Image (cartoon, rainbow, N blue to C red; front, side, top):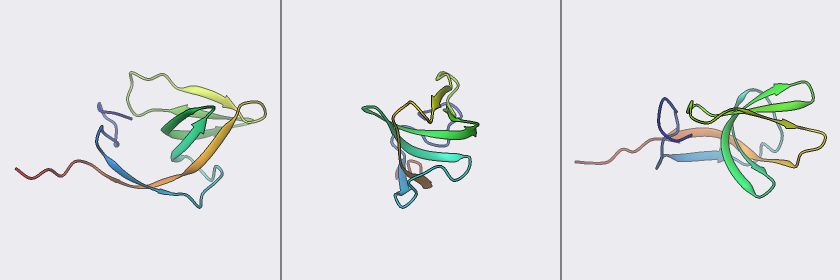
Length: 86
């Protein structure tokens, strides 16, 4: 989620609630798929998750909950975008 209309921009700081280890409801999560780390929107679909980005240059993809290795690290609970002083 970097730029465009994304809530999370390059350089944003996020707080992740690591007590959330499984999908609860649609929202932004920190997840690991195989060896890749993502901060993406998750939406539940029967038997799978739709992994989406706010940035339209990235295509959404599906993750099969039965066969794919998905690890939810936590739910994003706070985003702070750059607050640079002039």
